[in-house]
Length: 526
Image: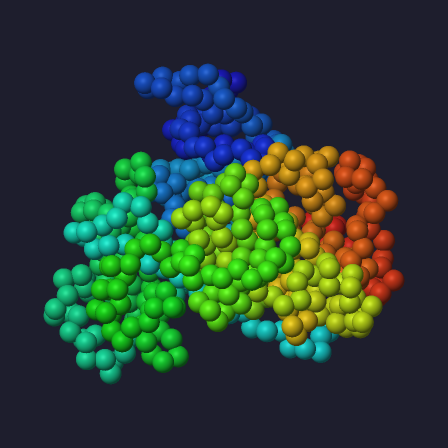
């Protein structure tokens, strides 16, 4: 140790993922803070082991709390991040007191700025860059996220493997005219009344039985919540999930919109006996009609769902994606419901090829449409397309969701010429080393910010950079960015400050917006 220890504690550290395909690993390390360094060591049998890493205090740029992700395990409830010159470190304290102690100590010794709550929830980046341009058509209001979820079997008859969705933002307005509802308090043992979220978690964890649940009053007056205990494979502690009941326009109750009921007892009875997960669609209900194209994961087909709904079906080749991780992410994708995002309906995963079923968009991908019909469009229509993409991306950013592969090829044009963002978040599941290689043809180097092709660091800022490239694609009617350079040359040129030229159809104002995406989003690590 180079000087006297200021603070020492055993904390959980997340792997730094210096390679894009590196898995998320969490290990306990003994963290030691001195006046000059923050170091972490192996720790076994109450003894400090070898040093695994060290950060010079003078290189630390920022220390701040991190918002919890959904379904965060108990041991990772108090995260904070340390941003330093050479990278980013995620650390998990055992409780709020410990986390606050570390934040204060680092702030004092490194003279750091700890981000405030207000700063963490600033307005999304995308509207700041595009929506300030005068627009003839009013901006559509963002829809609240929706979700499809299913509860597993009741306490006495559970299935070990099931899939479910979570949406803690959904709300239930009770029907006072429904006689069955008010009998819940008297007749149903699963109604717990006025207990808190933490109390429900404590009771369900004590029971420890897969599928155990209760219905309780929500913290918001007049609303109700289903709290559910579940265990993943090899998960000893289990997780408590909270589902808010919702109503449709006909005042029927639902957890999953396709399955509505007159009363809470009927709703609970149904979900006790249907545990497969509503996002798992029945393959026999989907009829494949014709091939629409092919992509990174396989062939895309036009299909009919239940004989009446047009859908796009991505037929996933075996071994082409990290399936387990994708299925976990599908829970989040189901909730990302916005007019400018392609709707994700569900999957057929019982056998190969796996189907990913989404909304069918009539005019296909934006890139092809620009090439074939772009000359028929007015500049105002091109700008409208950019607005649409901006709205969809602003919604993703507001939900802390990173696209990672935004480009005209991954947006779709509807019959009314509105544009929807597609394939958000899919690139992280590609099982192909070429995708992360700066010389591989499949890696979207020409749409990537410098911190992506140098450090594989994705963020909303790297999405903003890609949005600027997409705007350039739109106003050049589908030209290839940096068409005179190959990928390796683009890496060098962009790193040296080279930027795309102003398209002929783009006004100075439009180009300034475009250029600002590449300027403000291009802050690589020092």
